Image (cartoon, rainbow, N blue to C red; front, side, top):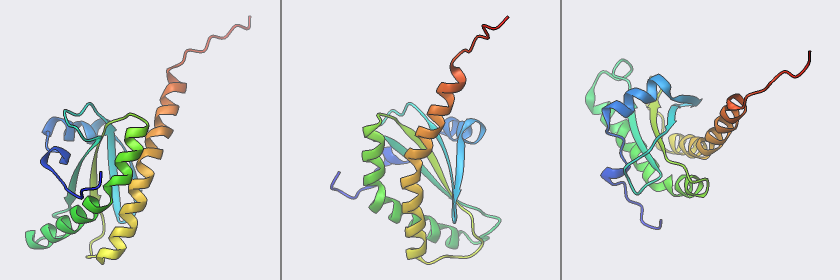
Length: 145
């Protein structure tokens, strides 16, 4: 994973999967981002697919929204390698969405620090929730009379 590319196969474009992300997915906030994620079977060679969104309510002009999305995409492109290695080591595919929360434009360096932190947290969140679901799936019988 030495090449810093961001191919079409790495983008989350499937409308049904995006809908399921918001209805069934789990999420966390690593300000200035909200990350909504879900384990998914991806028809891709990559272990993760991402969609990036900026609120129209916060930024009325498309030019500003597109600027922010370009910056976030570039930061993700340069820093996704570690996320991919982590996901491949635990053998899981994740679809997630990055939602930009603030109503102001942060500097690229501020966004980069926080996005790196969020990408490191994503596999940990998966492991935490998969352990919780394993515990809740097991059946406990009360043997006392």
